[in-house]
Amino acid sequence: MSVEEKPHVNDNPKGDNQDQPNTNILDDARSRALSEALHSSFKIIRIFMVILVLAFIGSGITKVNENEQALLLRFGVYKEPPLKPGLNFAWPYPIDEIVKIEVEEQRTIESDVGWITAEGEDPQDSFSFAPDYDGYALTGDGNTVHIKASMTYSLPDTAIDDYEFKFKGVSDFIRSALDNAVYHAAASHSALDAITLPDKIKEAISYRVKEVIKANELDITVSTVTIEALVPVGVKPAYDAFSAADAAKVKRIRDAEGEAKSSIAIAEGQAKVVLSRGITEANRLLTSVEAEAKSFNNQLPFFESNPKLFRHRLVTDTMQRVLTNAVDVFYLSGRQPRIWLNRTPAKKKLTEGEFPR
Image 1 (cartoon, helix red, strand yellow):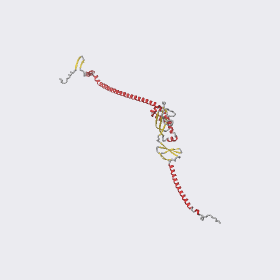
Image 2: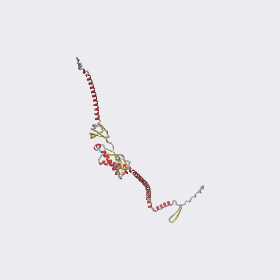
Image 3: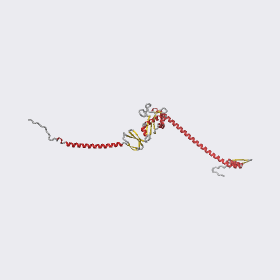
Image 4: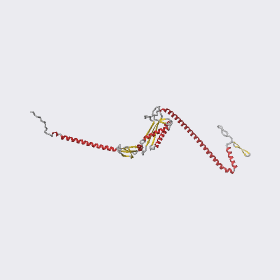
């Protein structure tokens, strides 16, 4: 008889759930730790988000200085009026944008159409002149020169918004006007003027730019204009020779003018001396004649009262003057001749050691 094996039956049917309380406790601890970690993370995230929001909002606060003009753009559209100096609030970019412009800013623009080559380089040291490659300007005497001009200008604070936004091509317009002025000034002067008289070319360029600005009714102030001019290297020897000859001519002209001025000054000095002497002599003669006339007028009544006596006195005075130094005098008066001997015996010259007797 075989013994049938029976399966082992657990006497405690609840034995499988003996570890379940411990597992639940462990799961609860994990959940609480995860919840606390998430809660802390959410706090940090909220604080960080608040800081980001405050920084985002605070980024729209801008300080405008007294020498600046600030313009507010909202979605790229200009909002009037301009912002006042001090702290100003605007929504952060890309909603709002504050553009600050210096009111007293001096802007510089350069014209190099008559200078740089087609590759944007400075004038080349080449004897071959290529009009389609080299930058140049034609002068009034049919020559060519390289000219580079620079100009500083400023915009008024009342019109900066118009020029910056309603007339965005102001820089291009000024550059175009300066290019035109360079060509116009070069064509109105000779190549020698462009090199030796740069101030004259600068004045012509400045005048031309101002005329263009005035014709277009623009409120732009031109401050200074500077230029740099060179002659093409191919004609530089001839230009140097011409410059030397012109300098020699100028020197000779100046020397001649100096000598002429010196001669004129000497002649004028001599003429003044002669004129002064003539005036002095004329005054002396006039004084003498006036004195004689006065004396004659004073003696006239005496002459009229007794002309014979007056004539006799005049004859006597005259004879005294005439016979003052005479040695022998023979005087005839009337019908009886009279001899007046007024000779003083000559004194004998004494020799050395001799005494007079």
